[in-house]
Image 1: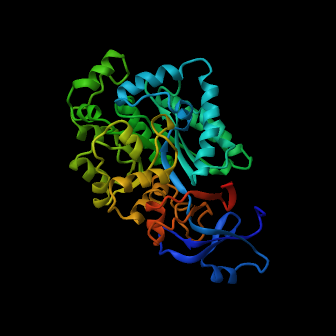
Image 2: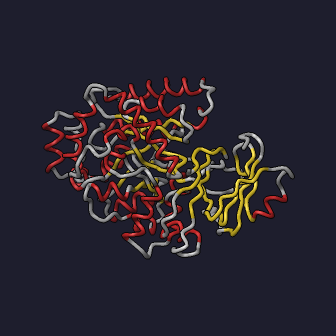
Image 3: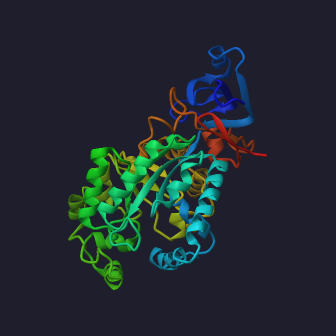
Length: 425
């Protein structure tokens, strides 16, 4: 099928996410965007008479999944680290990332990760890269991506200070602006001050200012562990001891309380809305603070389980009006990079949860978290034609969203900009 000529992609059910499901639905794609959608006969009526139709038999067609939080450069460490508290896990991960040949292994792992994502119907990723090396690898990949350049204050590799982050960001953005290769326009650069306990207060604040002033996507790990929560609330304990024993740059940066940290870092004032990763140990006051801002929260359910955290307050965030989205975290702490697997995992734990709500968390909400909801995340006019077809499960409920979530249907095809990037053999 031509990648430039208009085409129709149809299925037994069309699930737009932001509007009602349509039986025997279809999408008309022109120049990579959604030109029309609805019942197949109606879409045919506005298409060229010789338009090609790619029909997905016994399938549900919906927008591609958006993985709002992952670390693709850790893919090669899948299965090498046993379940453990996060701090012990870090102690195992860091040395193997410093071994000879690690950079090449990580680059190869990124290629494998992209293949896994596309086969899982994931068309966009929010990927955090420690040194920017993965950006070069991902640039030639068809997947859509927001690549967050990660800052750790005083790290052994750059960026280790805000000034280094800015310089690296400008260099990468200049190179990207000059790039005329096929998939260059599918890469957006962002920044990620790693976490409160690894980035100086002033540097987090500077990152927030930069993101607001230049409308740059920003993500930060926050309230991921009980130890971090205690530390941010002015208690000493395990995390303070870790920072001091390792001579980290933030060892003398403990806040007096979390309100002071929010104020000093401007963490909820990044303009387009910071993407807050995890918030596993958020209390009622934290939830209300986030709800009063334009920030989003990304939760990684199976990684959350892997590290043995307490129940996540994701539904309380939603009830407070917060945009909640789903990520997978890295393959070093997960079994797949499939957002659908994450959603089905949640549904298995909470069977009464609304399937439509879960699908929003893995599509339009995640797109909003990455500041891309004007382009992707739903089947709507003028959005990019990033789509996935999922086999219907006759043993599952007939309603489209419930069939996707409670069924076992596999991804049968994936498209980005209306171009096929995966077909199940």
